[in-house]
Image 1: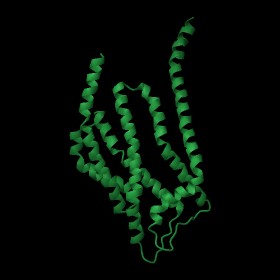
Image 2: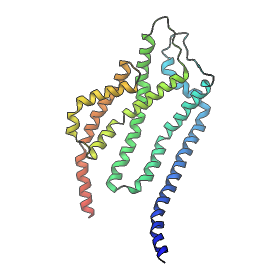
Image 3: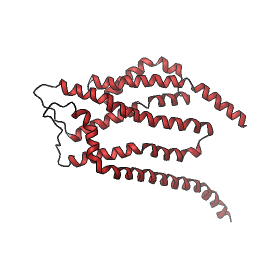
Image 4: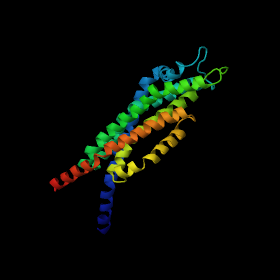
Length: 259
């Protein structure tokens, strides 16, 4: 009798964990299935996708210059890799929705009210960062690279090296555009304040250029194209962070009214 009673609490304690693990596995399977399905649909257009990504450089190459493949498998692997990343890029809203659906039941009402807009904003900002890199940064950056080299050097970029380069910049600018969300969350959680961040502006500006130096090629143009938007996005985060005290006041009122 004593053995049975001692086992029951353990079984009841383990049941919620098992259910959570089953739900987590189910949502991971759904996310992977969507990514695979998108990849399968895009694979037939893998070369077209690569041509689209390579267009900012190809449009600036001098006559007679072209991209090359220095490895035997590069003509296959480079478009394949890019198509896989494109599938993941397209599936990001669905993947994050699965993550949201998994953690949402454990959040309070005011946390849900704030978390979902932040999640949606983070997705849009990441897409915005990638679009900014492709349409604004790449033309300026590649024009600088192509026209600053010696006249007797013909530019022939390896397709795999080019892909690694642009994916790095896509990730760098996508992550940099999340700065307003990160700044807002730091203020909302009480980790810092608007006044404290305002006093640290000079350090933040220097930090933006340091991050730009580490995440972009070693030239002033690309570093500035990343650092300046990062600083502006930091200022936007502070601007929205001024709304945090009002949000906290509202949530306190809700908690008092519910009690």
